[in-house]
Length: 346
Image 1 (cartoon, rainbow, N blue to C red):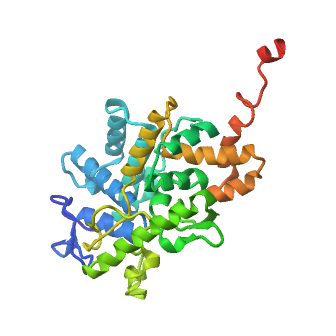
Image 2: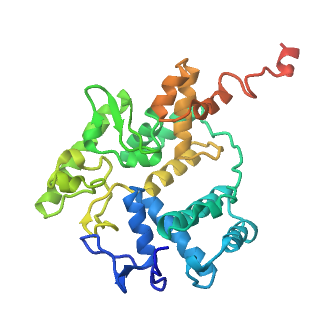
């Protein structure tokens, strides 16, 4: 047990530049303890925000009782309320369970064995939405400027949405026509191709971004978020051109962890809205999204005869079985089976 950290007011996050957290009776508040453990394990800022939010909701659900005073049935009641009354998806229910189990295992240091009987909700098996080549072309033609370049990164290089937005200048290699994806899903690096069709517009885009960065430096800003402790090892690297985001945000913002005002990467909503609008404008009625362009990338490569292991590496999948899902639309519909109607009337 960690002693009793104060729950009241635990949702107030410290914005101090030295990363310190407020103390109550010599101990950090409960949610600050959660943040500290998450950062110690190098989880992403999104995981941190999500886990902290679920811990708060768990505490509020049980009338502000300290989690250390709650039993197994309290967690069951919380999960049941999510599933039955709020009717959340299985992935949301699993995320809540992960957050609460993380709290007990790693923050409160309670015996994790008592949570072993909790089962994760079964996620429904869904086929990915895949666009045809003509549909992809129609969608990309509706995009322009930086959203067109980003759309080409999703379809032409198979990047995930956040992998695209988090690209740094140093990760783009125009000479070898490749992109280095750093710290992708599962904290893995990989190399994928840089589409030739995008190279010239991409270079013009980077010229504009570089001018923006130079103006920022003149104004006394120009720093960028650095992963882990690299800023201590390379104190001036956060001002270097190579570390800047390829797709910077329109405005500077305050980093929630360091409290430093700097320019972050573009928010994902910008591209998500642009792609949704492009799908509608192209007259496509599939319920596609940014990730559908990545699905289409994989499917079209397999259609072209590329080895599934090669596609697996380009996508960054740990298991080839994950990549196998894209074989469902190859050449023919319905598991590649020819319809008896087509044979009857040939």
